[in-house]
Image (spheres, one colour):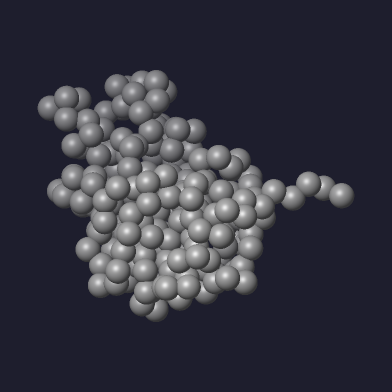
Length: 205
């Protein structure tokens, strides 16, 4: 029999909270650090009857496994929403405020009002429901881990689409992060419309 990995403590964390807050959504982001592309967020509502094998922090899971989990999360979630903030919003608001805006959009787009929103990190967006931040939440809460996977997979797919529009930057390889290859391509081809100008001030000037 193949070995199944179930990080039961992630689900137990949420189950304990649901005794006081029946509807919990987990919220996480992908793409705060890159030099290019929108920042993505997701919110996910699970229930006590949902257990998902291999669910964990998206950074600890292979790309192939994330793709499989993406479909399973969407199938099993009571509700979910994926949202984003644009490169323009990132440059206008700064990356922290743009991420908070995208998180707010993700929670408001659920179609139901959660009793509690669990936010990965150490900051809270302005929400109409009660919220708590959870440091390293994608390794603590199943709902946040699920949100991290939806956000990560969606953003990676988005960067691959940008790669088709801007093949000279090799976005599908580095996903917009500040790798040696990416900086070399920026030096060769300049800054594009999908680059975050505030992240590249010295080059932009």
